[in-house]
Length: 227
Image (cartoon, rainbow, N blue to C red; front, top):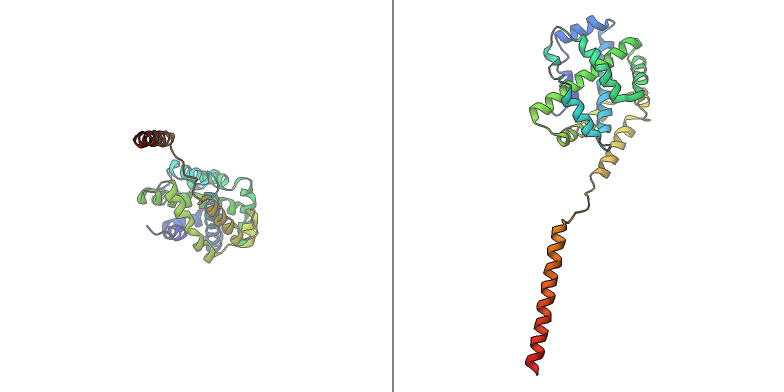
């Protein structure tokens, strides 16, 4: 699969799914699409940052692999359940900033707040769906998923996010959000001190003891011979 998560999501938002989105949310199609695109981009940026925090990627991996949402794009008749289930997922990603992000999306894309909330929930389901497919098809473990998420930094930087969105997530800009992730990654990448097994210490002590005994015996023999 392509390593561009956003492109993977966009490639699936065509045909019947696009028609269903218009039927569910109404309004102007370009505004609905913009709100959905902003929603899953913001959530992906949040996952990228969270993946570099202590325990973050394990939490994300459990979320991706435990929901079974990988077939959402095969369900041509019913996208509304994805919106209902997606809200709890989006809230778990954003915490108490969920409402602020939904309001920011509404302001940026000119949809009403109710639609922005529903589209943010839908975006969460769609994003996790794509991630689940990547994990399944590419055989990724938690570390592999973390690597995939970190590769999205350049894609997100090229695309950009409105400052109102990143501010709603608690960052002054997208650069500061992804820059912070890079710094944390550098800290996490530092190698742990090498741990020497206790048995190795024991073997080392025995070796030195034997060497000392041999040396002492040699000195005694040399002293005897010199007499």
